[in-house]
Length: 348
Image (tube, rainbow, N blue to C red; front, side, top):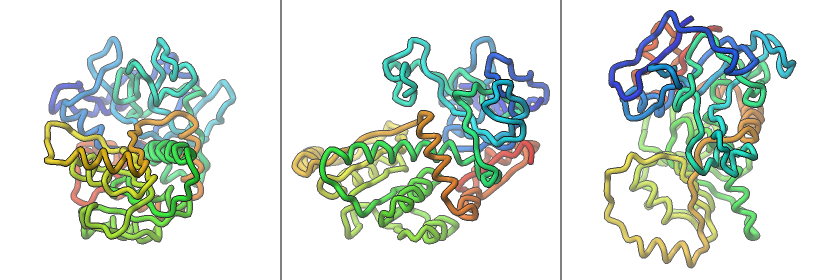
């Protein structure tokens, strides 16, 4: 069968392997036919040789952590042939740590977790893959064209879950949210914000292309200014760029008793001239919270499936700006100027 693979740490090693072995039964009881995988910045970084870890006993890593497939067989009866399914990316560490022991592998404390298509587990960019029932999320047929968005939606579902939990520390009725960055994570974060009835603002550098239109379709307001130039203080800020200057401006911009969630990962190695003392003073005196969020556990994946099911299918479909057949894989992994989400299609 076909698989998209790389040799982690080796630049230029991306390839389509036409004779990749069938998934081993130890991967899980549910056999799945791949329909599509989404491509994100993590894939580009692995292809660039920045990180990635092969499974034991092999020198190649199958890419793909944003999955959508169709069940071929499930002897456990959890799902049925023909059902749509997505595979949860992370697996708990083998120790396990206190969090992994209670299925909160997204909060792993010792870093020994594994991840499909990223760290020591084969990804979903292959014609067929297997998954254990515990890590399989069934999807309704209405999501057949957009179910590949489940993984990034799970990331923002976790972010919103933690925002809600932190907000319970005091009497708090947030009204305004700012989402910094209008990539897939930012737009999906804005979607979940609108589903909560909040007044939503989205900030991005793009002045043309699909982003302003997608934000407007949510009933949200689009900005291209700097964060510190906005004329309001958001109760909630979801930072999705990872750009150091934007991160710092976001931390300073939150309203009193505000919450700032950081989802973007900074590359490091850059310094910014910044008054840290003023930030500390503001955060202490205004009771603000800044926290980081990454990955998701099963509960968040289920919340994400609910959110996608409640969303406008046409809007979700508009997030996918390119669909590329697996035979043209190199094109799919080459970023385009107006790309939001690129999807590599294995079958329809």
